[in-house]
Structure formats: structure tokens, C-alpha cells
Image (cartoon, rainbow, N blue to C red; front, top):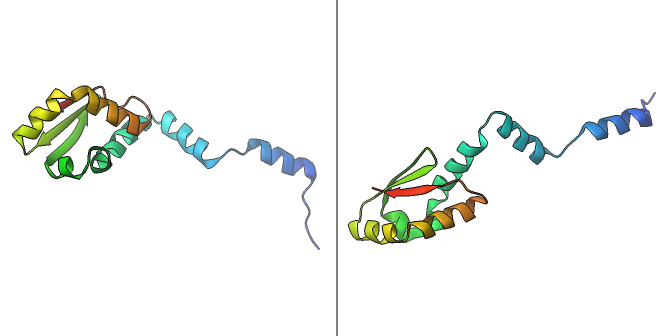
Length: 107
């Protein structure tokens, strides 16, 4: 004997369903993890965003209070990036899709 669900039960279940992407976003917002996830994503994508030459001269990246701290091995590169901090912040925020980085500090 086959079991057939009633149409009302199927319609009720469909109304409670939502896409998995929306569920994950809601979960991240509920646990306030979306900001940290965006920061980790930017650190992982540093080479893709800034380019391989800069990534090779980068020693360490970390976030603290919406500030990105970047330790560089090259003094001339540090000076060059200090001169264009606003452009770096703009590039990073554009890659993230919204404002994640408020300031960049080159060490």
C-alpha cells in the first residue's frame, strides 16, 4: 500500500521552507559571527585582492576592532601603501561587499 500525503500537509511544509543561504545568513547574524567571517575571508583573499607581489612581502595580517594590521617585510612598500591607505581600504571593502575594514595599519 502506498502512502500519499495530503495536499494541505505538503503546502504547509513548503511555506515553512526557506533557501539554505538565507538560513545560514540568519544563523550567522543570530550568533553575531558574520563580521568575523568577513574578516577571515578578507585575510584569506589578501593575495587575490592586493596581488602576488604585495602578498609575497606581507608577513602577517590580523584584525582588531575593525582595523586591519599588516606587517610588511619591505620598507619602501610600507611607505607606498601608507600613501594610498584610502585606496587599500576601498579595495578591501569592495571585495567584501560592504564595510568591513575601517582603517589599515601598516607595520
